[in-house]
Picture 1 (cartoon, helix red, strand yellow):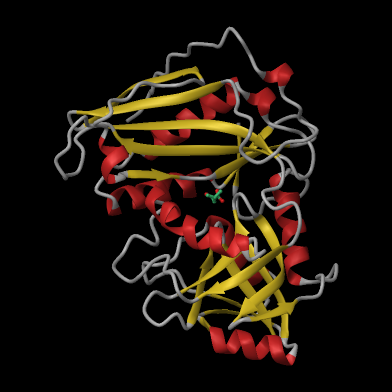
Picture 2 (picture 1 turned 30 degrees about the vertical axis):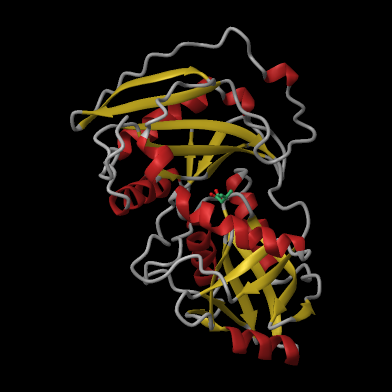
Length: 354
Ligand code: COI
């Protein structure tokens, strides 16, 4: 699909001057416009950019009943020249389509995704905050639109993108609890899809952990609960005796994180030893007991690099020291930020300039 025409209806009531860019809370503010596309009779069309606002759906909307809904998370940054840079947009366009296939939804041509993104960000470029630590979070998503109660894949869908200026998702290092009762994903399930239902299923166990004083869970495999998979809002990495260890993503249970992929690429560039393998809960416990766990951190779009400060395993809390400035997690955060804010070369062509 080429020459995509996207009519724009501009807002007459911009919220820009009412938004306090000095104290951005993740997900609270939304920018002025949104992109909308509808899928009907086997094709995407009716592309438009309109003011962000409510939309009408029928009570029988299939998403509300059977949960065909997927999403992406990405970020745009502003460099010193005021240009807008988006991190790894093509990877998100591809991953959306992988999720779509798993959830029996139509794929969206990548050029539609990218063109919509470019036009939306060009229009709302003043919403991209300037300054380290803040960015414009971008939320592309797709959901079923049929007004029909039979259980079947919907025939109609909507794809949308809206954006939100944000600060840090986690404002301080996080505490996590190894979850061995509840399951996030199991083989053959939907774990690797960025499906809304995966997040819904995680809320109750996460709430229980939060009541105990932990920020997040470390999910374990659904069958034996004996190996670490990922955390609630991010992939997770450990450095033990000099080696970076993170769960492999080919088994269908773990989200193929784009930040995870970027961190592994930088580790490779720096000749940092890496093992993509499952870390057993017993191995984690052993490393914590013996003091050989050097670093633990989450990696994700919203979370960026989230340092882990406390881990509960088998009823026991272990505290992790603050990473030193030369720690891998610190260096990788600095390098990624420098690339994202356009301060250094972008050797892997990750940034799309709008
Ligand atoms: C992201 O990191 O973009 C996510 O989608 C995680 C979460 C905010 C749901």
